[in-house]
Length: 201
Image (cartoon, rainbow, N blue to C red; front, side, top):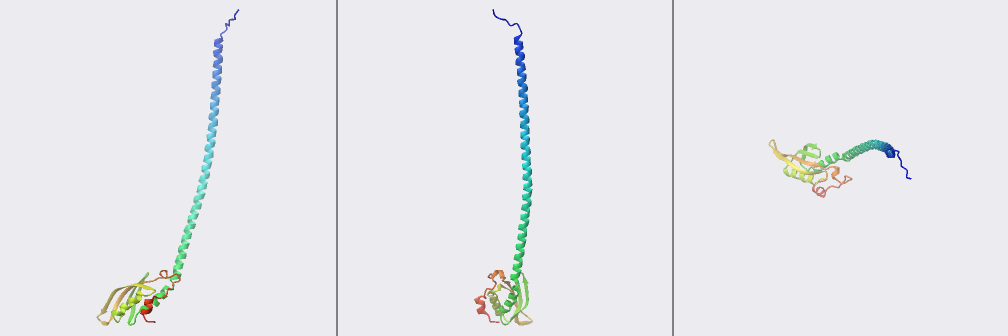
């Protein structure tokens, strides 16, 4: 004879399903919360690590910036030192130039001429003097053009004064040859044209 269950088994089954559903829902929420916490902690740790690396990089950058500034200062000091050395070397090499200049002025002056004024601006020279004739002035210019320590003669004025017509007053421009324009030893020999074109002192 078949058994008939008169108890509300369907209601009981629904309660059990509801209990299982809520349990699964709570478990899923717990797992989700746990995953969120783990993810938050992981990202926080990554952010902290990156910030620590950024801070270290900033310190290293500051250290490198200081080193670069020190290198730039050393390079500037080196350039200043080189400039001073070049100035000292130039002064040492230019010391005999005054002696060469006056010695050469004596040598290039032909007979019958003498200077009344010598003005120098840098390497530019302005020579004023008197000569017995304009031919003497031309000889002076040729001597300067052939000189070792003088060059580029340019005649400004040559005239005869009314009070003394026997002499010619002249104004002559030329340039001084510095030691940097000669050979490294500064002792180049006289030009053949000058050696042959003027009298020995």
